[in-house]
Amino acid sequence: MNPLAEQLNQHLKSGNPYIYDMLSTLGQEIYFPKEGILSQSAEASANAKKFNATIGIATENGGPMHLAAIQETLSAYKPQDLYPYAPPAGKPELRSVWRDKMIGENPALADKSFGNPVVTNALTHGLSIVADLFVNEGDAVIYPDKNWENYELTFGIRRHGSIVNYPLFTEDMTFNSAGLREALLAQQGKGKAVVILNFPNNPTGYTPGAKEGEEIVAALVEAADAGINLVVVTDDAYFGLFFEDSLTESLFGKLAGLHPRILPVKVDGATKEEFVWGFRVGFITFAAEHKDVLAALEQKTLGIIRATISSGSHPSQSFVLRALKSPEFEAQKEEKFVIMKGRANKVKSLLDSGKYDDVWEYYPFNSGYFMCLKLKDVNAEALRQHLIHEYGVGTIALGDHDLRIAFSCIAEEDLEELFDLVYKGVQDLQN
Image (cartoon, rainbow, N blue to C red; front, side, top):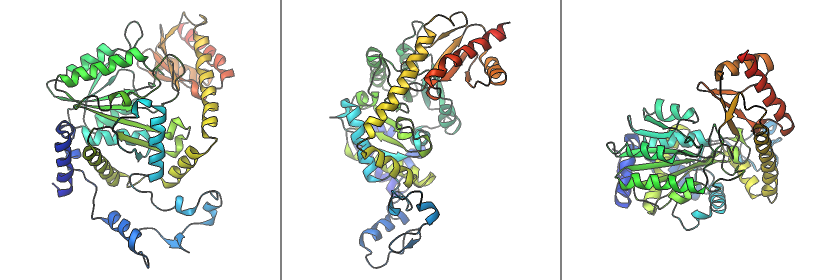
């Protein structure tokens, strides 16, 4: 094993041996090179005042070489904020500003020990880093039955984790904390599990309330007390879009510093929070009590980044940073939140009107981009196909009877027509 990897592993063993035990084989072996091209280039940038012949970019007139045809559309930005490689961990100022944003939106984090967010190529990349660092073949990866399908690819197919599902909802349509607890305690023989908490949930648009949040935390602590090492990932892709009766903070804050056998990992990003899906700017953040542990986890994360994408998009990071620092940012974001909340409320009022009750029920939703119908009599895939070909309406079929509808991309004034067409499609199939 490389001496740098051994050194990082020793820091983890000394600071928290449970976290070391959580690592996959790859997680144990990975490191960020200290004597490679990047480190030598960084040293040269700081000290080579006459000529710096280290970096793999072209320069001209004291700055990065670039084409006028590109720069003319980006004239608000300095070339040095667009064209050179971004650091593997991301722009330092962006990381700092995002950390401050996290604390502002999650007061529970104010006195907690957690690392500086590392920039990822959006949230899928952050989840992939978690999988690489912590999942060996056969390791349990726990998440509910209503989930984002990419979890299966990321944790199951790529890393051969053993997927463990539990029903998201109880019969009373509250979060199934008992199901989570059962899935957790079933891993005592393995002694380890990766847990994914995705709120607001994709596909249902559900975020637990305060009491449910306490039950989730209690289940995790009980499992940790039973000797199970837990990597707990809060997939906060839709964070901030909380419309009614739910937690408004990430559970990352509650979990930070809670138990030595619990490693909280926050995966979030500007992607959906700031409505910049194509920019692909996300973050991964670890919480741990020891600074050496946080530093070692960051170095291993940088090793994964270096070995896969090398670094994220510099222009996208500059765009996001400029927006976060803008004095108009909060007001503009609130304006979009109001639009999204209006759409969610409109959907709920339509569904509660009773006009569709004979053909479907709906799963609870209070946040995010989506909601899910629970069809009573027709097959979801058959309905999806019928709606596309007969009415030009696109929806997502999940299993036999669940139909996901993204109200995020439908204007409020068009929502009633949308649901009327879905209803008509169901009647067509019934007849």
